[in-house]
Length: 191
Image (tube, rainbow, N blue to C red; front, side):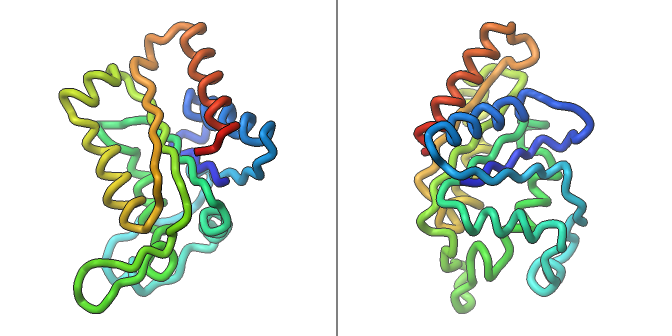
């Protein structure tokens, strides 16, 4: 499995790091091999044109990350919800790593791609300040659904599970410990 930790702050540890660590620990306890990708530690440029997306080479700093994604049968994406969606750095990483020829290939001029990441499952883990109920009910979990359908599903990844953690700023220690325990259990079953 590959765990893609998408919190963009490399200067200090956050709940996202702890959740990713707990998942990895559970997976390793169950005998799963784990590769980690820390997006904030990678040096790469944002793509700024269709030409750059389709015609330029993958930045060398992202080659190990792309290899980990290709190797893994299960992908875990961990990130905070910022302004209603994933942080820009994680989106930029996905645009770079999930390029044509790796994640999908275009079929004719139809606009529909051939899914090159079939056979992989995923878990999307998102932390947020608001309650999960509010995010699901009022905002309809729009950004998580978009990520699952328009990026992961488009590339053939499925099934996709999700773990959403809300009210993280006000969460007390027992609640945080319960979240970490849950992630450790999910890591053991790795789906």
